[in-house]
Length: 64
Image (cartoon, rainbow, N blue to C red; front, side, top):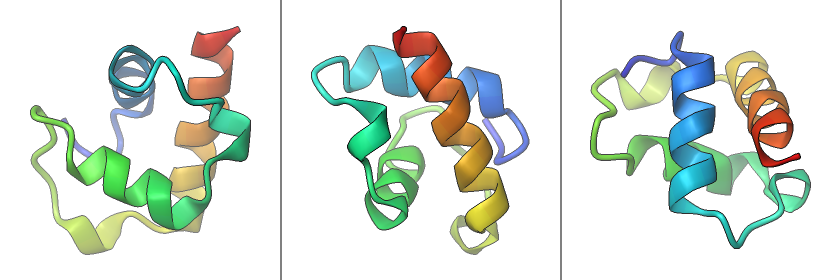
């Protein structure tokens, strides 16, 4: 997965961290969650605020 795979990342986060409310996750923690996903294979430094916002919003959608 790459940073642009927002929906796939959100699904993976929802499955891996089902006990976490995505509305309460700080961007630093979210960034770490994403780069720690087993299928994630992209430059860790490219995960800026805009993509993290999109991932968090998609994760919230997945968890509802």
